[in-house]
Amino acid sequence: MATRAVVDPGSLFDVAGQSILVAGASGAFGSVAARALAVAGANVTLTGASAGKLEALTEELRSGGVEVAVTARRPLGEHDALAIVEAAVSAHGRLDGLVVASGLNRVAPIAEQPLAQFDEVIEANLRGPWLLCRAAGRQLIAQGEGGKVVLLSSTRGLLGHPAGYSAYCSSKGAITQLTRTLACEWGRHGINVNAIGPTVFRSDLTAWMYADDGAGRQTREAMLARIPLGRLAEPEDFIGTLFFLLSRASDFCTGQVIYVDGGYTAG
Image (tube, rainbow, N blue to C red; front, side):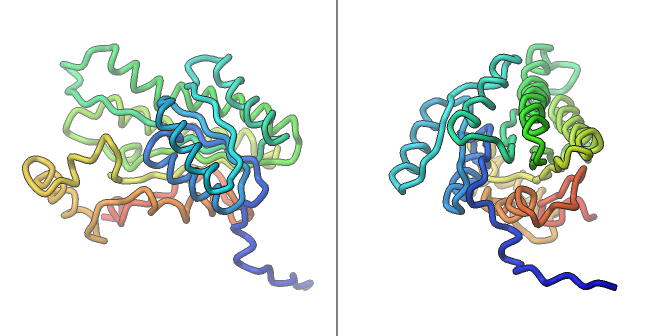
């Protein structure tokens, strides 16, 4: 049997020179992802809902000598998604990877939740990512050289929740199935589609859970009783998995949700 030369393991995770579009870059996960990718030498394009946060992040990266492209818009429709992908291609000549890091939750019991809130969650967590995947997929297929897509699912795409998460859990469960379906559909094009499934991590939306008193402390302690590693997550906890999924290291991994959750879903 022929033997293969052993590849430098570190080189497998190299993303230098890749054109990677980070959607939701104004959020906690997306901004950390953008910083890490830029430091690693990727050609990054940023998009997100908050123009002010995007501008601040762009200035930060550029002050460090990193060239980034930015388009402050959300994928509300086909035209938006196409324009976002075209911004990356125009800036960097091609597209190699897509990271969809955006997300939203509106908590209410289903019997009391307005339909408008449900629609808002589905639009942010499923419709927008679907539109971005379609636009990015068309570009990657046209290029004919494969590519990497990383979506953001959740432990709540696997597990239910008693506290008014019917919209959120449904949307994240749908992202899990979108990941699997696109992996099957795009495998023949050499495009890997995977997702990261976090538990609670520090962000503007969850900052109250990190407080030392009141409801935050009570909720956190209840969560920690279910997390074997004994702490909640920080956005930086997902960077290693992200680099794996965007690099050659994951060339034979597709259709998977990797739960980076401190063991929450293990028991």
